[in-house]
Image (cartoon, rainbow, N blue to C red; front, side, top):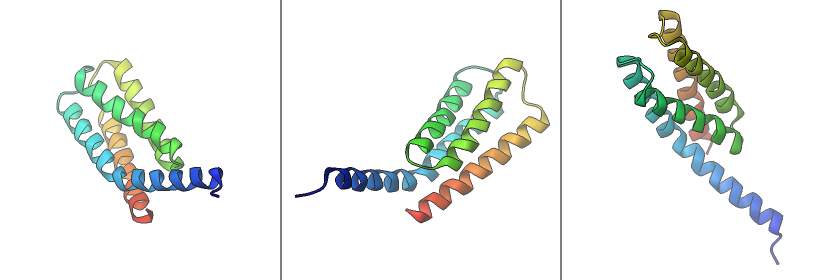
Length: 116
C-alpha cells in the first residue's frame, strides 16, 4: 500500500520540476511585457500585464519553493507599484533597476531549469 504523504510529495516534486522547466519562458514573457511598457511607459494595459506577470512569478515562486524568484519578483513588484504612483516615465535609475531585476530573474530561472 502506498503512503499518501509520499505520493503527495512525489506529485509536488513532479509539479515543481515542471514549473522550473517553464520558468525561463515565464520570465521571457515578463521581459516582453517590460519592453512594451518601456516603449510606452504609461499606466495602462501594458503596465497591468507586466504587474500581473511579476505578481504571478512572486506567488508561484513561493508555492514551488523558489524563494529567490519570489524575493526578486517582490522587489520588482514594489518598483512597478512606485512607477504606477509616480505617473511619470521611469527615470534612468529606475530603468537600470528594472534591467538588473530582469537579469536576476532570468539567471535564477535558468538555474532552476538546469536543476529540474
